[in-house]
Image (cartoon, rainbow, N blue to C red; front, side, top):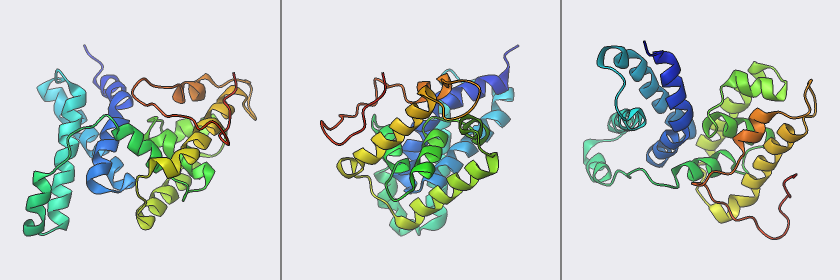
Length: 217
């Protein structure tokens, strides 16, 4: 018999960044986007035992999460203002994950908050996993992530790739550096962190020829 929680967890690990990234374009709030995506995850845990795992579980989660987002917009805006916006609801785009990464790495956040938020919403690591990776308390990471989401929401940050690229590269470098040459712990290399910053074919970032940190080899 299929281990449903394990299957749902695997799907979430693979699809969460794309789902949250798509929702971010709708609600313009990383924290809210993640909450809506997790609502869809809860719905899957509740419904799939009865209906079975869909043929395309990622698409099911995306559709369910988008419905949650539309419901949220309906509750927060009048129908007159909502009608034209619903007609222009964005379809999933290849750059959704990239947009999410640039947002979570926005320079308005301190470096440690950018790292924690990126590992949470882009890499899909749990708060406990991030805390273990950096050998700090889980509560510390939870506070960093909550503060980062609050700062992004209050600042109304925009998606500006050219202005934010150096900040993204810094976060990637910090994560890889900690994985490649851990500052503490029993092992010198933390493969889990190294893998989280391994380049993906769908995410292409052109590194400037100067001023950007070089990745250890």
